[in-house]
Length: 158
Image (cartoon, rainbow, N blue to C red; front, side, top):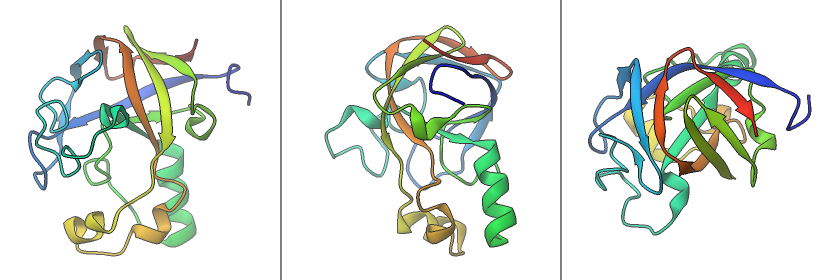
């Protein structure tokens, strides 16, 4: 699979209004260019890392397949509301999208950097998922063109 020869799907949307709060599932969300997901902690500047400059926290993605591999390889099941990423996708080669643009529903995103887990997630979940998620923790992106997204939307190379 190349960075341009794939078509994926948006499986889940999650946001939370503030750090340390439970992630809330959504069926639909508004993505605002240069800001983030309307109502999410980084959009509201109430996230754990909101005080650190960088456009790479506007939206985060993780692969459903990677979560399945973590469960198989490490025996550590991480549920959709636990991983703290905004979008869970399937059929999308996130590791290959750094520096590239792609679409989710009406929105255009650009991969900025591979996300690495932080030890804070261990505290939140009260178990050790740090190493099982190392190099498998998703993609941080910026929103180039805002728009509405819906669970089930296609995720496509641009």
